Structure formats: structure tokens, C-alpha cells
Length: 173
Image (cartoon, rainbow, N blue to C red; front, side, top):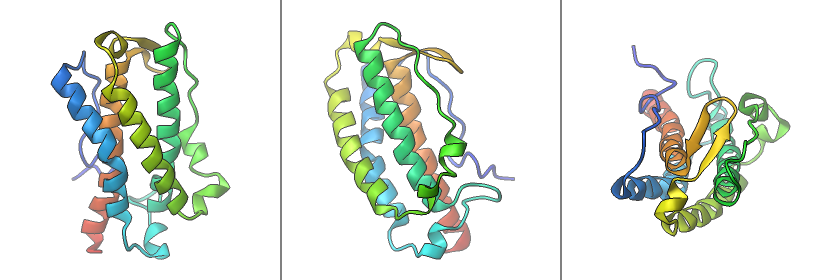
């Protein structure tokens, strides 16, 4: 049976990204807002409030989660680029997804993602080889390089967009 939690497969941290792989990761990050907007285009409130899987987040929560997660991610990138191996803060994403704004309109989150991803991609396209190798300490994962973070978020956006598109396909929306 298909694992609805991982419609594009699980993420595995690469050892390192070469220049071509970095460019691919940047394009993936850059394309998330458009892919997400396309995925939710025309959905009704009832559809937005449908969980993408049993006991999963609703489509609306997924949109807001992407915004929350990627705001945190950009901060993590900037910390890694400006401090010596900073230890980042984790956050309880499942609890964030239950805060009252989970029921709010998705347009503000979509707009935030568009601006955020434009700036994020602009930054990533201009990093030196040394900057791609800078590190941070993730309390749950350990030491990570900037290129590994880019790989993670190049997967993360499409992963959640696929939650929505696979739900739409299953339910024939």
C-alpha cells in the first residue's frame, strides 16, 4: 500500500552537493510557491479543510506549515552563513499547525512564501563554495552543512505539494 505520508519518498541527507545538484536544489526551492499556488488553485473551503491522509493535516494546514517551516529555514541558513556553527532552535511543528491561524485564509501564506522564496533563491544563487560548506548544529540531527539544508528544503516543498496533488488525484478534484 502507498505511504500517503511520503508521496515522493523519504528524504535522505546527501554527503554533499556538487554545483549541478546545488543548482537543481535552488530551482526546486524557487519553484515551490508556484507549484503550491497551482496545487490549491480553485479549491473550496471544504476541500482546503480536507486532511491529505487519515489523521493528517488539512490542505490549509499544509499551506500554513510550508510558510512556517520555510521562514524558520531561511533564518537557519542565515545563522549558518553568519555565525560559527550555531546551534539552531527546533520548533514543535505539529503544535504550530494547531494554533488558531491554522483556520485562516491561505492567501497570506502563499504571498509570504512567494516573497520569501524569491529572496531565498537570490541568496543561494550567490553563495561561494566556502559558504555552501558552512555548518550549523541541529539538536535533533547533528552537524549539517548549508548544501545539505538546501537538499532538505528542495525536497520539503515538493513533498508537501505532493500531499495536496495526490489528494486531489485520489479524490478526483
